Every structure is written in structure tokens, then in C-alpha cells.
Amino acid sequence: MKEKLIINKKSYKGEDGYKTFSIRIKDETVEKLDNLAKESNRSRNELINILLDFAIKNCEIK
Image (cartoon, rainbow, N blue to C red; front, side):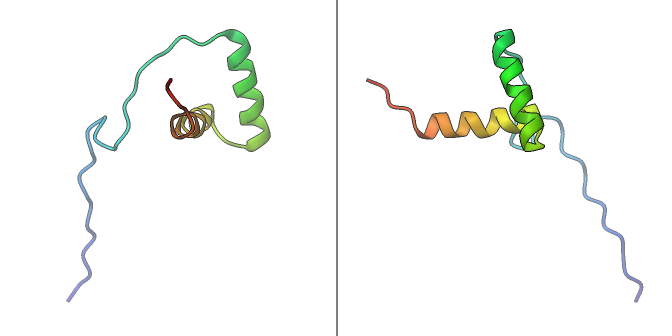
């Protein structure tokens, strides 16, 4: 029996567990993110996700 190549259907945008939206960020914050991205060899998007996850897990509302 020949082996079959199985091609899964591509998910529609937004069905991969991620959402896309835009935000306004200060120029100095973008500069800091870009420096961190360069140092860590990660994309700005990866860093924002890492930083947001950390902030959400470690914030306290009073």
C-alpha cells in the first residue's frame, strides 16, 4: 500500500488561538522593545506576548 500525503486544511485567521489588533505605544517604548528584540533574537511580537503573559500573571488589583 502506498503511503498517503495528508494535507490539513489551513485555519482561518484568528482560529489559531491568536487575535490581531492594533495599539498605540510611545516611541520610547517601541525603541526599548526593538532593543530587547535585537538582544534576544526574538521578534517584537514574541516579546510583547512574553511580557504581557508575565504582567497578567504577576499583577494585583487593589
